[in-house]
Image (cartoon, rainbow, N blue to C red; front, side, top):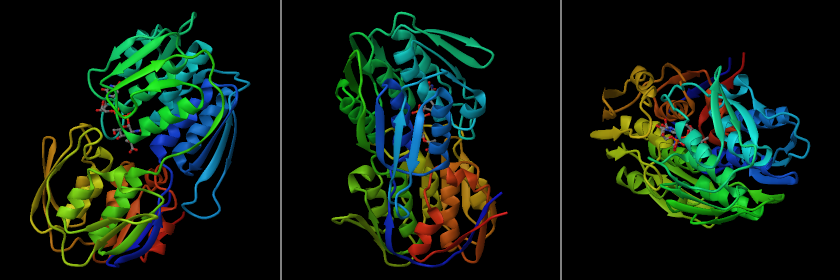
Length: 426
Ligand code: EPZ
């Protein structure tokens, strides 16, 4: 199993290109199932998770081709054609590896009127049920039966638009329902819908495929179903979590980096916190410049929220920055119930953190110390990378496959900015 070795203490300087967003690419790939024409996705990152989604789509009979960009951080190109679909079952073996596989449910039922999709099961960051997805599909006229760990979905007469009020905001349930509603008969209203930029990106692609959607980026989305969707070419939006992670790398390490191919709007809730911590952030014509001159960051409190609030996917990384801050910070996790798995690993590096319910109380220390640590999930792993970059001595991160799910060319990008980081392959 690969590991990552980091020798900490270097300032970061230079340019880091930001890849296309994993969490936009995955639903966009699933959207190819809505048409028999080719969907081309540009600026597509090469990550383990998009590889799993490609594998799942091929198991249905989708023709897939992925060509990597010429250099690291330069997006690749997916061509996906769901013309000859031979299977509408998403097996447990793939869904358990990647929960986003569940996003094929809506498009499969919309186009083929049936699907069998494994329930994803639990996850390192929380129980993560899919009840909202299933209720929304039922509201659109799908009959749902749970059998031996699978969702058996059928809508022999196709889907019919409905008003769906989500009891709380769910990114995935909004995406599944949006794709299903795009070719349902009549109008669907999604109330209390997610507003994340990845939803807007998916909606834009669906519109380019012929869907009629209004209200993207607001909590009420109206969809007028159309009978046929067609192929299109769509560029995946930049990854706001990768953007925020490297901005935090500059904040914890000091130095000045320019994040290119991204924009400050994507991390609007993160910028004031990084500024409060002593980082200067300014837009450039290529992206965003992030700079911190020296000394320790200042402490700041945060609570994770749905967009446009502070993203749960940056909570662990911010905690690494706060672990070296002057003073005490409170970090509250409101989205997932078990998303503090990085805390015991940060403690191994000399951090002082106590968890009380949904809040971590972080007392910043003068310096973190390199150690052997274990990656537990994707974003937790990236917080250990940030801690390792700032720590005295050597850090070795085990179970790096978590990082490979969501950070494209991580070692190359950080090395180019002056970090001493390498992959140990066994
Ligand atoms: C998406 O997950 C992201 N994944 C997650 O990123 C991200 O952390 C999360 O949104 C929140 O921003 C993808 O986009 C592929 P939710 P998703 O449905 O859609 C509960 C990463 O590291 N819930 O908005 O699964 C759920 O348990 C990942 O890239 C239900 O109870 O998140 C959670 O507590 C991790 N029932 C809350 O809602 C449901 O049917 C929000 O989950 C659905 C969700």
